[in-house]
Image (tube, rainbow, N blue to C red; front, side, top):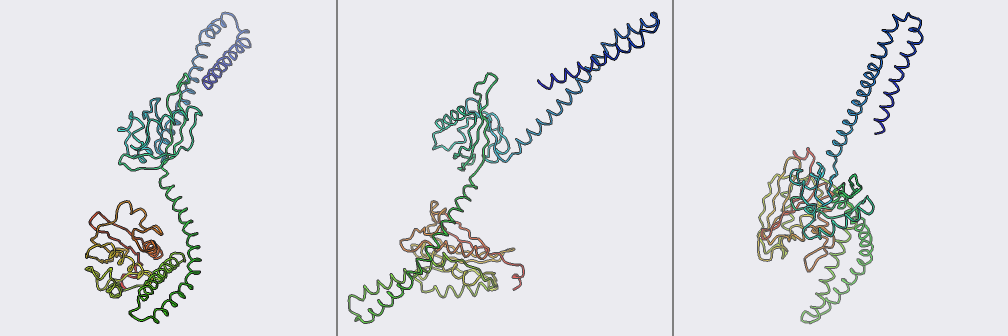
Length: 426
């Protein structure tokens, strides 16, 4: 309204200026001309003057209005483009919490097209286990009380059933009478951000645990070795039929178990640098399998090995040996009855794929997210560091590890090691 008023005042000023100039010409020049000659000119001024002045003013006003409308249209298109291409979801709800607008960002976050979501109640985005009505009522009341609701964190559900974490900021919309007409919300998917934040916090915690574990392991390792040696001396002094020999053997077994735990703690806590080299994996795996041949977890199962004789991998020999020992022993322990352990290896385009699989019961779905977490284990014995160390060693060598499992169909661990091009011909 201010701009329109300004344009009207400007046009009125222009019209007045034109009329004043014409009047000045009449007074200055036409007054000295004979009446019979000046009258027609004065009449022409009185007839055409206001008309021309009004016409010019109208054209000027119309031109300014058109320019203003073009600018307004450009601003509207720019705003619509920004809203439509925003990576954040921009959603408006009416006073009954029905969805009235839905941008492309909201489509990417939730998976619903605009045509299938408009008009639906906002509760469609809430997990089925939540109290939708109570949460929506609380959000509506909170937004109305302050007109702006900042950084509301909530769990939402996508079209395909995935639960995501969102950060929502809302602004109240009111009609001309000032009554509540709904709210406009900016929705941001923070699932990945929170995952990274939690991962960083976990790594900081693990670093502190690693330092503490290393200190404790060093303090215990030497006394433990002394205990083991002393018990061994005592055992050698007892006759074979002495019942105390069984107690001594059990003590030595527990000492060996503690020693393995300490070694795992030290391996987990200390930084490692890979010493990469080209290895003939067929010979490498054959040596490891001979070492494990008499292990109870391996001996009772069938081994199915498929590794090309000329298979070359680019890896650290010590790290890869530890990885294979852990994966093979885990596979053997996962088989309750005599089963099959399968070892496969292939060179692909730019990587080597090594798989260790079993035909056991598989890994429960609820265990998978914590499978590589330190100190997590489903076994009655063990530190829960084996797979954590495996993943650490794989990452040190610049690779990654994948897990594929299904109920009663076993589990497959795949180690993917990337290799330089020159290793192809080694």
